Image (cartoon, rainbow, N blue to C red; front, side, top):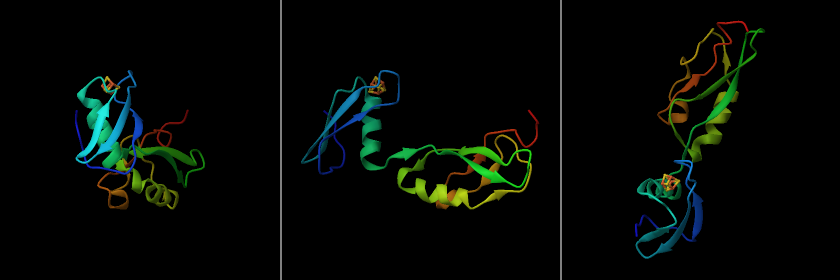
Length: 129
Ligand code: SF4
């Protein structure tokens, strides 16, 4: 039995850490949660993070000024708090890339104060396909 900070209701969380996809039942109790259904410790860590501070990688696209590649793909260079995703998407939607960036170049630094950057994931602006 393992526990973390409490929440109101029991819920099931599917662990996505490995292909097993364990369905972890999270039952609240006085000390936090009781977890069942996970095959390993990583599932408990994943469920704990989902219950307390869920994180996500954001993948989207951004406009450019270049007619040969009017949009390019971008993503966060780390995980961002799920609660900040919408703000990050809005911030990204308001910019237009005006330099021929390549894969890995930072498009937005420290997006929404999250500590992660938005980086380019395409070479469309430097290679024609
Ligand atoms: S609990 Fe462990 S075995 Fe199950 S999906 Fe998560 S990482 Fe894989």
